[in-house]
Length: 162
Ligand code: ADP
Image (cartoon, rainbow, N blue to C red):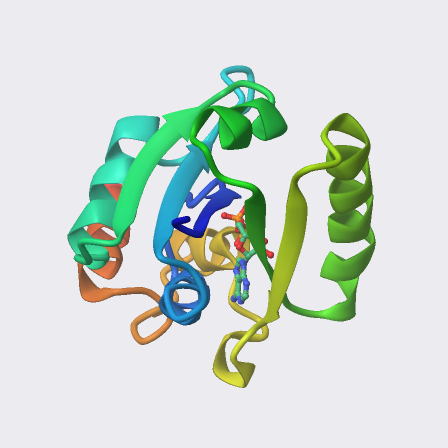
C-alpha cells in the first residue's frame, strides 16, 4: 500500500521552511499532496491559483501533487486515499494551535494521524506572515524564500509603492 500524506497550509507564499518539511516528508512517504487550504472569506496576498503555481514551480518531484480545497481537511484526506496529515512545528507558539488542530482532526476521523516534523533550525523564525511584512516594508527576504517567490514579492511591493 502506498503511503500518502497530505501537507496542508496557506502557502501564502511558499517559503524555505515549507520546502524543508516537504523535502524531509518525501523521505517518509511515497507521495505527498501539498494542499493549499483556503478560506474564501480570509484575505491573502496571493490568489489560490498563484500559490499553487508557485509551489509547482519550486517543487518539481514526481511524488508530489499540488491541490487546493476550502473544505473539511479530514474529508479531503480520506477522499484522496491518504491517512496522514503532515505538519511542521516551529517555535513553541506553534505547539498549542497545532495540538488543538491535531486533536479536533482525530476526533473528526480516528483513522487519520497527524505527523509533525520539527523545523530545520535555519527556518525557525520563517513564516509567510513575517516574510510578507518584511517584504512589504522593503526588507530583503532573499534566502528565506525561493528566488521565484522573492521576485514576485519584490514586484508586488514595488507596484504598491508606485
Ligand atoms: P505560515 O504559518 O508560515 O503562514 P502555513 O499556514 O502555510 O504557514 O503552514 C503550513 C504548515 O507548515 C504548518 O504546519 C506550519 O507550522 C508549517 N510551517 C510553516 N513555516 C514553517 C517553517 N519555517 N518550518 C517548519 N514548518 C513550517
